[in-house]
Length: 318
Length: 274
Image 1 (cartoon, each protein chain N blue to C red):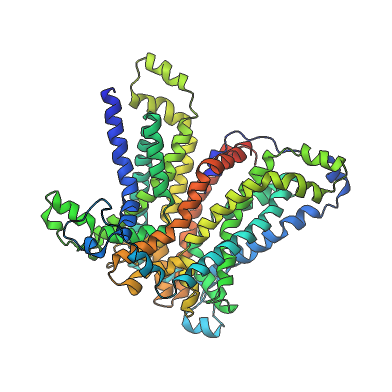
Image 2: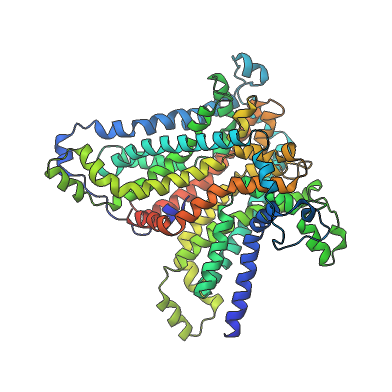
């Protein structure tokens, strides 16, 4: 969905409004036109965010949910989560999860983008078609099919592994073990994220003038040096944008983890968004869940600020 | 062919296989007879095709009402977003007013909303306002999820349409609204279509809120939520499960195919002009 803004290259000056409109219309019109948007955002974005903040400073359990009248307890909820070892292990896991995914996504999608660029026409279209297919599959269809691929008895992955000589995978139950569940979720997220990043990077690579490479080739530069000296420096802003987007998307991934493992087995795949949801849903501790959500939002804001700085630098004037 | 080219093509085929295989396996399983699915050695090609699993999936309890619910919330959410975004995008792209820059920044920020962090307050709000288990609540959320993106893209498309066209129409005696309806709207239509299709995909795929806000009224659930609990419906019938997943993916795939050539270039053209 972010293609549109990423593909934007040269900022064009805003068109001047028609002179007639400026002269004859009441100044109220522009504000009337944005009023529905502003109202929608106020009720469906800002209000929930504020409500979340408020709940995180209240005692808010099942009783308060039903009867209302929650009391303010200051920073008790934050104190509770910050002194909980489990919270810190979840934070650590969330960072590790994000780092592993994002590094894999960035490296693989760069390689795939360079590969697409190096291919002939037919092979290129075939590969791009395949990537679009993987990109298009809905998350819920992906989680369903990955559960099938890694099924212990009839799953095709175990069959292939056994056929390759890894006898220990005969009937191996992937989802019973923390590490392997974690690995499957990583594979699934990388699989779903690489197409967007690779196709966007490829689109960016095609904008680099070929003459630069030709003159570098005359000077005797190999492909690795060309990437390091030409492609990457020129496309650095684009890499920055995609990196920020992927960090944000991976950090807040919820559906993949919740549907596959609900944070388990044990706590092996428990990340911040899943933890917030779990603590609110199963323990009815909406206050603690809200506090964890606020921490998530704050951490995301740091990345978001980097993203917007990059984006607005790219776009010039909005 | 040069050896370097051959190596590249082999690598490309490997990447292609890796990208496509899960989707291929899903569709293949959906068409396989149960006997083949449970065979000791899986077959990797469609040798015997059966539609039994699709009829199991379609005839499963409530499939059609979930399908209808999903379509209903997605379409109504996107339509609402389209109307509201049209107004806002026109205001941003065509009129000059104080606070415009701030508004645009706000839309960009709203586009990056971490919705996953708003699950708890949304649940509390829905409960307080008696909107739990009601599809209109989901419609509102999907409206807000797709609105910022819709405004940004429509603004891009509008900027690509020269304002001179409307001015000329206004000189010829149209008022501002008529100029928009007769001149701009027809030019904007492809952009509206592609934007709304992207929005539709977002809403069609959404799981977290649908799962959280529809609890007691099971027949108000949407397809992704139903699919997530496939083992309740199908047990270990993987053929039917894959058939259901295939049916769920189908509209999204069709939209991607439609958008591939024609409209992505439109999005790019509209955006580049931005």
